[in-house]
Length: 282
Image (cartoon, rainbow, N blue to C red):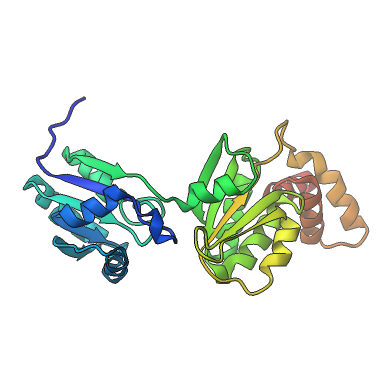
């Protein structure tokens, strides 16, 4: 179904994730010609413009996670009036783990023209450098901060066969890798990409046990984590390993410890295995 297009337009533009030389000519042209620039952090955008030697004549407004809903009506009215609005986040493509999705959703519903200037992407760069399969992948963003919620999310992903890409803050990296190892198993392969395209770019590759050892040290910078998908084949079933848990319990291990040990060895969900053991007892 065709929608009536507006005279103005919204342009989502990717900005450098580290190296300023990755700024595209189209990004620079729009910085100089857009009527309005909606930036996640106006100060960082002005720093980018200054570093690129670009003068920004358009109106500069803030557009971030705390005000993006409030800004929707204003931005759509401006586009309807013929304005070209350039939307930028601090790094990479807006709307991908950054503000922008709500605006695109509202713009599509209102028949507003939306286009994009492609460019740097931490997701694709980390995936390409990981050494893991790239033919099929899923971007999972940031895992929940709370341990219980994080474990639940990882258990839901335990049988995902596509390569997975995550973002993580450096001060939470150790806890994140430890949680992934506990659910996916020590031998699952992965990569930690740090400071991509910057002077101190670093990609650490190995199994999750090796990655955890590295993450236990002091880590700084922007982080992307790539984890291999589950091995192709018939997924292991938790019910197949109830007897192993029961044997460990009979030898003196606490139930939760026995479940954790078997789940890691057999690469099954701890939550599902625990439920299967309880069901077998009833």
